[in-house]
Structures are given as C-alpha cells and as structure tokens.
Length: 274
Ligand code: ADP
Image (cartoon, rainbow, N blue to C red):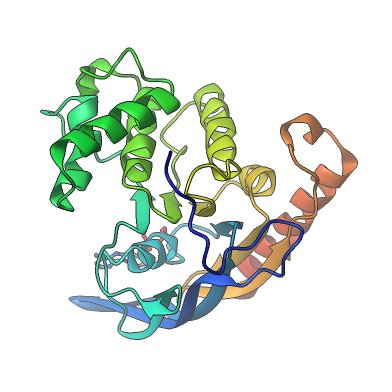
C-alpha cells in the first residue's frame, strides 16, 4: 500500500485547507515571428485535496499554464510552487494526462506505464508492480500486453491515466482529457477519475483539470478558475457548492443554476473582448 503524504495534509471538511500548489504572477510570451502573450500575470492556488478546473475559450493559455505547472515549459516571470518549492523541471510529484494520450505506439500498455518510472530510476520490479496495479485499477487488467493501436480511445486514455498515476504524484494535471472521446466513454472516465481523486488510500488527491466544457467543470470541480484570452488572464473564480456524488444530481435546479452562473461569467468576458 502506498503511503498518503501526511505533512500539511488537510482532511476534507475538518481542517483548514492550505495550498499544495501556488501559481504566482506567471507570464509567458511566445515569439515565433510574431509575439503572442499567452499568459499575463496569472495567479491562483490549489488547496490540499481540491479538484480545481480551469475553463476558458480556446487560446486563453490553459494548456500553456498547465505545462508550466508540470515543469514542461518555463515561465518568463512569476513561478509555480509545489509545497512552497519552485517547480523548474518535471517532477514525479506533479504529473500530467494529455488530451491526445501521448502513448508510444511501439510499446505495450505495460511498457508505456513503466517508462516514466524507469526514467525516474525506479527499480524495474517495482515499476512493473506499479504498472500492473494501476492498469488493473483503471480497468485494463486484461490488456496489459496490448499495443495502443489495438485499444479504443477510451482505453488509451485509461493507459494515460495509469501512466500519470503509477509514479505516485501528489498533483495530477489533466489537459482536456475527455475532449477526444465520445460522450459515453467520457462519462465513464469522469466517474473513474472522481473515484481516484476521492480515494484517500492513494497519494493523488489534488487534481487540476483544463476544460472548455461548462457542465463537465461543474460536475467535477470544487472550484473553477475562469480565464479569458488575448492575453490569457484569470477573470473570475466560482466555488461549486453542489453535494457529491454529483452524478445523481445532474437534473437538480442547483446544478443548472451553477452551470448558468458559469456560462454568465464566460459570456460576459467574451462580450468585453469584442
Ligand atoms: P488554450 O489551451 O487555452 O487553447 P494555449 O495555451 O494552447 O491555449 O495557447 C495560448 C496562446 O499561445 C495561443 O494564442 C497559442 O497560439 C499560443 N501558443 C501556445 N503554444 C505556442 C508555441 N509553442 N509557440 C507559439 N505560440 C504558442
């Protein structure tokens, strides 16, 4: 059994939450011929045990921000702190699930999940054991030796989730993980991810998910960060007060009210951009 980290850990509903991840005044400009300010002075925090969604229209810098949080991209100024320490390169403590899965086609499901652990220097037997455990956890116990081209989109994303979790991160970053999947497959994966997020016997209970789907954000998040483009800025924040599990409450008035409120925040900013 993996140990859940104790230091500073908050117990949902009982202890005051503090930040596990802090995004502080992050600025990022791309210069490829023209200059694009992708992110302009973005700050927010991710509290212990929180499920945070980042929502905004295409081009508002959501993916760039997530890549900076994962240490895959550097900010021009500002910083991202994990437990108070700046993230300057990829770390096994903060891992990412990609929109287009990012699996190596010549490796099996097991090999794809083992790879980041081997790169991190984990002994082979331990990496194998963890890959096996997490692939079973995501429902792929009978597909350990399958290659990506033999798997459906939903199954490939399950491998992506197992790969990101197997190394034992504390923070999972998800970049529009369902947008390449059909709605029924996406629904099953949302349920799976919420189960993993709320399982306190696992070390990964802090999720940050980028989405442009309003209902999805309201279904999943404790708190939603709203961004607007050109340049990418945080323009609002919405705390989602709906009880969990929410899948039983998707027809409740409170669910529709929250969706409307978020739609209002997004469209008022879109009008201001015009
Ligand atoms: P989102 O995920 O919200 O759609 P992105 O982070 O992908 O937004 O992009 C934000 C802005 O930065 C866009 O204008 C995009 O064209 C630009 N951008 C992103 N990555 C690069 C890059 N590698 N080179 C140049 N411009 C980029």
